[in-house]
Length: 458
Image (cartoon, rainbow, N blue to C red; front, side, top):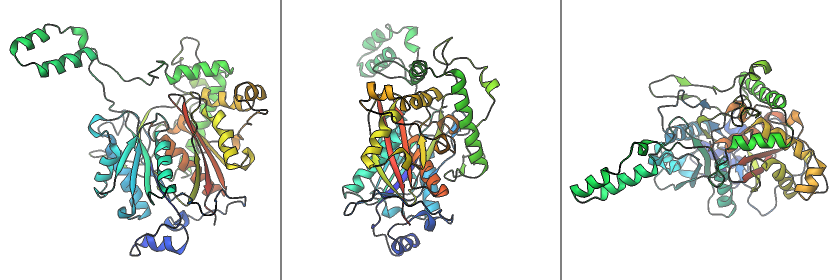
């Protein structure tokens, strides 16, 4: 997913219809770029500060999230990224020439298009004079792309930036074994037939065993699933609790989809196939059916299953920020436990409390991960002994939490989830008339991200 970031007083070409709208008000906001009426936000203090550039979002779109191995299986990552960029430009009528920089996040890179941001931008018709680069930071790669853009605008280096992420899990790179790679490289350097024959004589059948990519920590070899299982056990989160939460996520996502609330999704015509119009991983089931699944990681007694875990998808999201002012802070904390630590810090930095937040959007890597965070946030003992706080963080009200579904139901494309979270918070604030949204996500490598999103004042 990608986002366009700018600041309120950027001067755009006066010949553009979008520029005219931009000039009428201090910011081109969604009520002008899009026909949907805005809901009046509640009056609270604003995070805006005088004499400081306030970075704003304009609008956002994404291609549908699909299960890996389905309609996107014959594509490459830049195909999805290009489609989302094109969809964004079409929706907003923003001229390509006003974009100063493009940044994408991705995790499992396609070696042919390692700088996928650049390839997608050129494919979408942006000038070759518009720089673009790609970042990787596990599940918060898109978050890093956005915060990099925020920094470039806040420092005055750029005025308008496109930031986002893309992930293609249907065609991941599978390498030859190290022994086979070494043999092939040595053969390429061999200068005589004798040298080649000598090298070939060292070949063994086990050289052909491929190296499959794993969703695991390089430094510890632990997968996210194992970490989630241990976390759930440490906080006594039962299998039933995890299944109930996963069912909630799918049910809310289905409701949001049926009611047309997932407005950031744009149709994508797959070459040679049908047009994809909606996410295909939203599948409300029943607790009875979910209970039949076996543990996915720690067997036979683990509680994390395919039903209460986020699934891997093929997707790109593109978000061109829609009249929202954002305050961004990033925190690098403990694996899968970011929301508990990041939430109080980002709130304190912004001078807000949990009661000020109208919309919570947290990354749902696993049901057990979310529920363990809930228990930690609601524990005075944990706050005092592990966080150095005198009181607990406090529990996010469920009526404000991931109301349109989350990663468990919509899917988790590693490089794009961060932008989906931000746009979900932004669209909910506009729809529900709220002022502040809180976004938080965990990531591999003991890292994480937290952000406050503020609705642009009318």
